[in-house]
Structure formats: C-alpha cells, structure tokens
Image 1 (cartoon, helix red, strand yellow):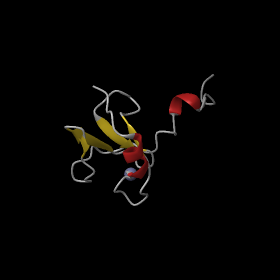
Image 2 (tube, rainbow, N blue to C red; image 1 turned 30 degrees about the horizontal axis):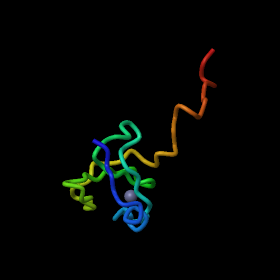
Image 3 (cartoon, rainbow, N blue to C red; image 1 turned 90 degrees about the vertical axis):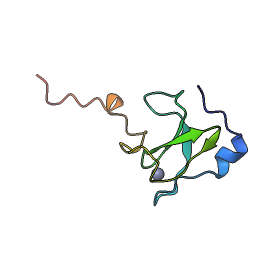
Image 4 (cartoon, protein in one colour; image 1 turned 180 degrees about the vertical axis):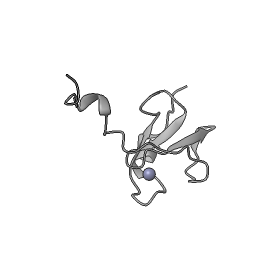
Length: 80
Ligand SMILES: [Zn+2]
C-alpha cells in the first residue's frame, strides 16, 4: 500500500524529534511502505487507517538522514 495523505497535511506534519524535520512517505528501502520517514533522523512512523502516528515511542529507529546515500559516495580509495 502507498501512503496517500493530503499534500496540505504533509506540509504541516513534522517529525517529533528535536530537528522537527519534514516527513516523507515510505522509506528509502521501500517507498511504498505504510510509514512516514523523517528526513533528518530517519525514524519511520506507522500510518494506521490513514492516520500518521507521530509518536517517538511508536517509531521505528532511524539510520540517519536519507540524503546520506553510501552508494553515491564512490569511496573506493581502499581498493587496489
Ligand atoms: Zn526526526
């Protein structure tokens, strides 16, 4: 399933973490997951019956900002 929230709602929703960063639907690994993922801390929040549960207690632990993609860094200096 794809999270289908009102764009206006998405505009005002922020992560309850210290950064209060924007949220994106799905996760980096699964863009169609029924969760909202913080762009800063990377926590994923479940969406239940179309209602995002923005509670740190309910969140899946994050792995850091999604923009930090190790695949695009091209760090191959150790090889050879
Ligand atoms: Zn966050």
